[in-house]
Amino acid sequence: MLKFIVVTGGVLSGLGKGIAAASIGHLLSDKYKVIPIKCDGYLNVDPGTMNPVEHGEVFVLDDGGEVDMDFGHYERFLGITCKFKWNLTMGKVFNEIREKERRGDYLGKTVQYVPHVTNLIKEKFFEIAKEEDADIVLIEIGGTIGDMENELYLEAARQLKNDVGSENVLYVHLTYVPILSAVNEQKSKPTQQSVHLLLQKGVQPDIIIGRCSEYLEDRIKEKIAQFCNIKKEAVITGLDVDDLYKIPMVFEQEGIINIISRHLKIRINKDLHKWKELIRNRESAKKNVTVAICGKYTQLEDSYASIIESLNHCSSNLNCKISLKWVDTTDETKIESQLKGVDGIIVPGGFGSRGTEGKMKAIKYARENNIPFLGLCFGLQMAVAEFARNVCKLEGANSTEIDPKTKYPVIDILPEQKNVTSKGGTMRLGAYDAYILKNSKVYELYNSVKVSERHRHRYEVNPEYHKVLQEKGMLLSGTSQDGKLVEFIELPKHKFFVATQAHPELKSSLDKPAPLFYGFVKACMK
Ligand code: GLN
Image 1 (cartoon, rainbow, N blue to C red):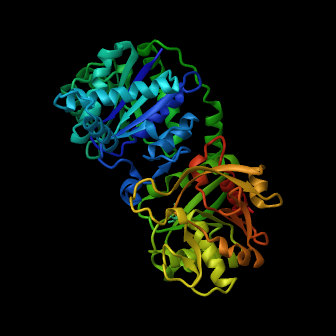
Image 2: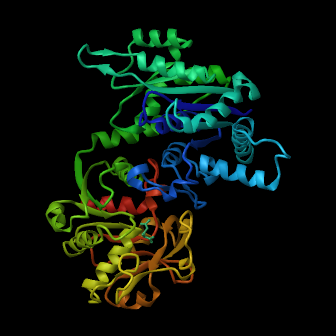
């Protein structure tokens, strides 16, 4: 049994196609092995070289793949570990086409978009399905119907129906149903037009999800059904919700399970109780804490998507509401005033020198005022630099990424990274083990001497400075097995001052919040 579900989007971008796909996957995931594939139209090989303010967070997988942030939703909603290969990009596809062409694989033929590129895309779908022994492959096609760069994916997805039979592939189309305020009426025209575009490409949707601020009225469902050749029951509300974990519940309530099971001839039973309870927990929470996130990508919250998610997970598991305060560190004169009264401070990952003095100011403020602090990757590096400057008295200590001429390069590039000039995938990427000291806060939180978290960085704490940092009271509570690479630091005398070279936010889930975040929020609550 191999089934395909293809998710496309129309009308406009940003409707939550990734969440919709992940939610469908969630409903199927207890019983079936669901493998997501995301198809992105851009020509970058991966999003690793894109600015997070433009593209949102770069998600990193265990295998070191830098992928679209939708993979965060997939992992969290499906409870799986995804692979780099499951993110197709036109950059990857064309790389492979060119390699094949140069090798002579096409035997003198003219290499064309159809069938050569579309066949390669389909081969990937089947290859991944086979490798993973998938029951259901969930294919999300990026962008909006009508975008030129996604046409080849759509054409490949269209052909699937003929290849595997109509009962083995289901097409879901997500559109937008606006409510015109002047007449206070739900409008179906954008959906009709989007579906017409899809029909022109030869794809008849089996389910239409209409994103709307209210539940879709019967009348509108009927109209969409009639104009788009589907049954009224197959028109589902994609309700605006305050909490995206509610989307699977909305879909279930709207009857999506029946439509999917009837079409694909499968049985679906999903127990949603646990999630419902965890969501209720955070809604009914009485306690409230304020957490400041101090970074330079604060204009786009998507740049810190997994951090926000991890805090949400803690919120559910600790019965506590968390308000976020965004502190832009590029203006270092306003840091302390903005941090007054916050219950905890996070300094997230980052690159380049802009905003770093502000980050160090925020860390100093946390350290001196005994405010819970969590440093993530660059956050650890900045915490080490701040400590070196202000506690070890190494004036001007810094990372060589920021100040290549610093007298005290407490953070420095790895020798094996020094000669790398190519930009993509050249960092220390993916899951690495760290060995944890017993009698540390980090050990207490992970309850294990060996932990694995994901990484994405070039620079490290310089081993030449381990000793002075330790002498002045910083505990290097987790390192690589040979002790050379610092993975976790903490200040034992502080209420909660912990940082890691990794990105634990990438592995947090609603049922299992990342331990460091959990400990951090707990400290904020005290
Ligand atoms: N810029 C730092 C480095 O490359 C930190 C990277 C990060 O925070 N992900 O080491």
